[in-house]
Every structure is written in C-alpha cells, then in structure tokens.
Figure 1 (cartoon, one colour):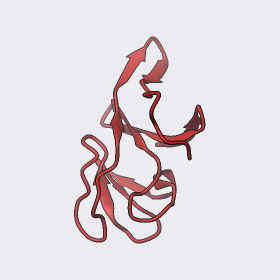
Figure 2 (cartoon, helix red, strand yellow):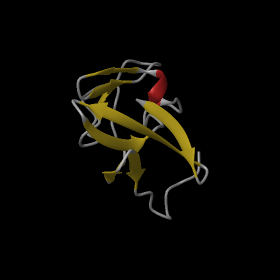
Figure 3 (cartoon, helix red, strand yellow):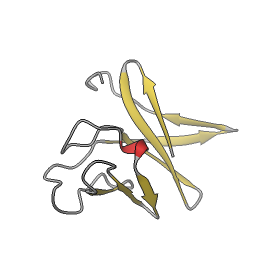
Figure 4 (cartoon, one colour):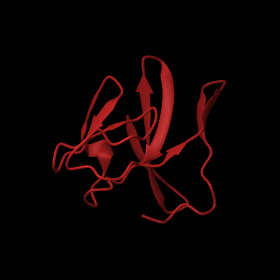
Length: 92
C-alpha cells in the first residue's frame, strides 16, 4: 500500500492479490492516514482506533466506523498504476 498526495488530496493505493485499488487516505472516523495502518487481505485497519474498511468497495466494516471511504477507479498501463481522481475531491 502507498499513501500519496494528488492535487492536494490524500489518497491510498493498495495491491490486493495483484489487483490495484485506490481510496481516500483519510479515515472517516478520525483525521488519520489509513496508509499508516495495517492491510490484511482487502481490509485496511485504521492505526488510531482499529476500525476497518474494505479497500475494494470503501465499505466501513463496523464500529467505530460510521461512514464509508471514497474509492477511485484504477488502471494499470505498462508499469504505471493510474488513479482517476475527480475534480471535486476535498483537499487533505
């Protein structure tokens, strides 16, 4: 997994079994970078309160998470992982 800034927005890119996914890198429960957490399979665990999200769908997997994270389309072109970031994405 890799956390990065794109146009002032914080995103995270994950490799799950050879498939790439991208989400907002900010936990919806507390303002903390998910890429500082732990990725196990398709679940990212927030490093602050251990809430988890499914990185393939953005779905929050239970307390303390009450709101899903945003996901973004990803494609691989040659050796590059490309993420489609919408213009309305809030800045970090």
